[in-house]
Amino acid sequence: MKDVREWLKEADPVATEPGLSDADIGRIRYAMQAAIAHRRPAVPWQPFAVATAVALVLVAPLVINSLARPGGDAVSVSGDATPSSAPRQLQFATPGGTRVIWVFNPDFKQ
Figure 1: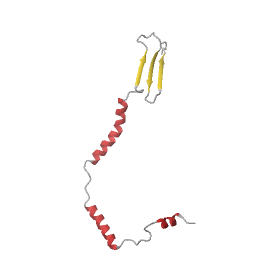
Figure 2: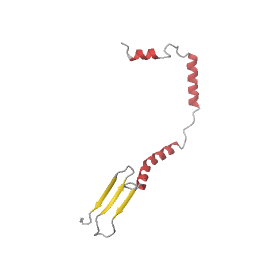
Figure 3: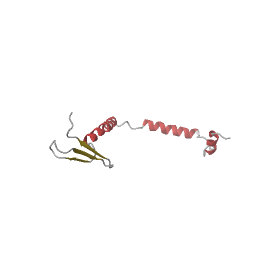
Figure 4: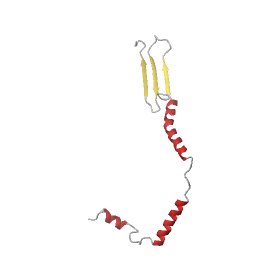
């Protein structure tokens, strides 16, 4: 029975090819060292951009939450202004279709 190592060796398309020559290794090494020597310095505003992005991620939910109306889009209050009238209702309807209806008891005392 074959193990994974043998399957990988058999499926490797370059397993039978010879390795790199010393000249190729030298050219690759020279290209890498030249790229390191001529690399661009880090952008000076990069830390500021990262800090700004983190601040936006932390503050955006707070701003959105303070701007959003609690209870959904449709809010209606039924009943008149007199305290001795029939029970008042407060209704909320969410965009997903959920409805919440609160009935206030006018005879309730604390």
